[in-house]
Image 1 (tube, rainbow, N blue to C red):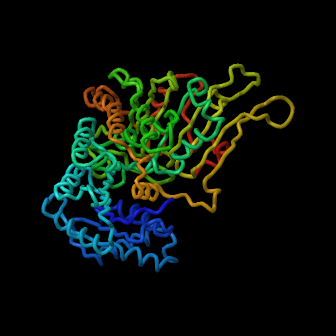
Image 2: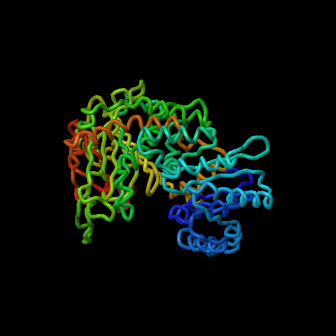
Image 3: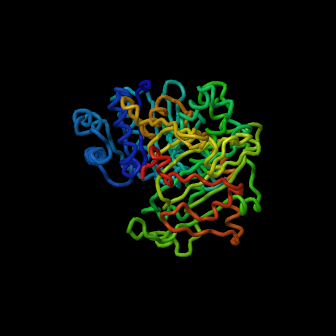
Length: 511
């Protein structure tokens, strides 16, 4: 990892949860690894009247709560905290941006940062179309001549639907070049996601098999064992499709299904993932009913504890039809993947927290050895675990010791935790550093965002226009509605359940 140029990082919404839990601890980790420039400062912004000293104390408390080893790094903590400043401002008040500009100017002179600035929008999405425009009005987007570079990081969601995504992109691109805009998706910052590219393109045994000739189907699962927590109001206007599939899981699918890029340069990789999104088979209204299942968790008892149903959560409408679970069957209509189904699912209040990709290879054309297992279990599987317990598992058939040819499935596996000397960097740490050095490989591009919305929009339209489409209930703590199994209509093929049959997958289970 190279050291970035000197610059100032401005965080809008610096008193919020994201800053305390993720951003400040990630920045401190970069400081510990000597991956921040010597001349560096962070300006937090927010409406609450807060002094520099008060902001520093709040962030010191955040480090105590969310960062490891900071007790043994007291001098480093002091140096890091002393680089924090605060600017009180109302993001919707145009005149308040003058105060921010003055504070930036003063710090630039003090630190000699050459005008290099990153603006991080850790704010509600409603401000994404306001803050960047007001920054531009006050010339804080200008990187002409010797004014240094300017970058802006935007958290998902990137729009509420296709129309608003296009409008947001148009507003941003009116004042900023595409290479100034970093749309952050923390899933792409996870080490195992990046390792998919290495697994595919650095090993001669995988890429020749990575196509419709040898792969039967692909599963992508992201499950959470928690409910909506205190986000009921936000979630009820969003739902699982917008919250997880439109961004995280489609982006992950793009990495799995992309063609080999010409180089490992940012745009070369993003060009190939864009082609995947453009090849997604559009869903007609009748396809939505057949290929997409939505569910909503109900109250249940988990490990002796009563948990509320979704409609009983704070901020959720009593008659809400918002989905907390989505499973879908989709196809990528190109030469590599023609006819191969991709099964994607995500949900809240499922049995465990796990994100993984499963490549199901086709069975041998002639079964020489009798198996008592289902077709699903008798095929080779490559399991790529994104979180937790990051690693890769390959399931193969081996002869059971003894007479005869009884076959059992065994695992060949690798865990990142085995690399004790190399800590696994959190996603935000990696992505913040990438932005600082100008590497946009793991950030979403405008055309990719719109292509994903282009695929998702017909599903949203069908759900809103056809009330006959059912939303199935499922008890909290289960793997979603049973109707999700009907998506896989081939005999002997089922979803993989990561916390089922623990003896087979013991190393990959957190339960």
